[in-house]
Image (tube, rainbow, N blue to C red):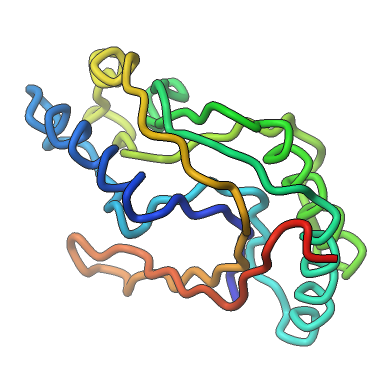
Length: 191
């Protein structure tokens, strides 16, 4: 099963950002991007890819232990940027060091369980808003990032993270999106 660990902003934070994103989606060319929906929005900590079912119980156990080792904090969605022409994202401010530590724990938990993880890359917390299309349909994401650069949402508590299963959409179905299912969630500082 395809899994990832993530922090999911509360509904109020996602609604605030959705209102700002709605204005950006009205900009010329925005219809050529693949926009994510607020219900899907999350701050990924670690992407595990396809994980054998027999490894999932050990992964859950290690993630639960790891959650207890990190203190709660406060975050807010703020600013925006882009990864070249591929991804438009919203940034995060506040206790980012807790996010980095959680990401490190999520990766370490997977490795200890035998889940193959890619090489070390610096963790860059972000929330994916839209994806560009490759090739001749490429869209310059700079105007969209600039339109959200001054966005600053309300603070919210960073109190838990989740293990999420990603169900890929059926191939060949126009507009189909992945579906996310929370398998488990753990409060921070519980252990």
